[in-house]
Length: 222
Image 1 (spheres, one colour):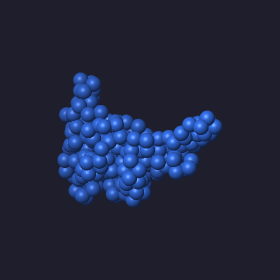
Image 2 (cartoon, one colour):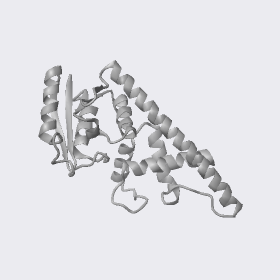
Image 3 (cartoon, rainbow, N blue to C red):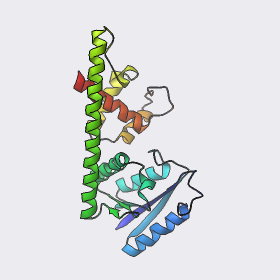
Image 4 (spheres, helix red, strand yellow):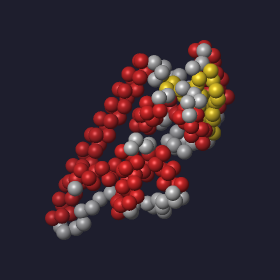
């Protein structure tokens, strides 16, 4: 099996034992040799936070996976790839759509195996449950605020739609329903020169996600 290695250090981690790029690179090479995998490349992001989706080397690795140049991405530690369960689940969903695996050496997470895929489904289910619970709480709070504002004769509209044109919101919702990730949508909006809600220089996946979620809440509460 062909795999691509991904390694990362943030500026605050570069001096810590076991976090160096060389140490991660060697660990991945040894693991691939042990398993008989062909390591097509090891791509490194230096000085990038795991919370960012625009990491250059990560995007290169994802491109290799999408083009079927590798069948899995290998990391020494899961937090090299994702910094939260929700963030990890976004990668899991992407890997399932594009049919590639995720291997994290620190706790034996391997979606190229049946057991690994089971764990991935459990994590995705938990993340979905958390999202639904949070959504219910937000909708309940918005309903109370809406009723209060309506009683006072105040505007009752909430969310990012105040700053984002309806045409842009509709574009985001349609793209998401077609299966595009928030990262893909953000890149497309940048290429199309669509202004960001707060006048920033570029679109971030987290901004797209907030707009999409706000639009969904508006639809439910309308």
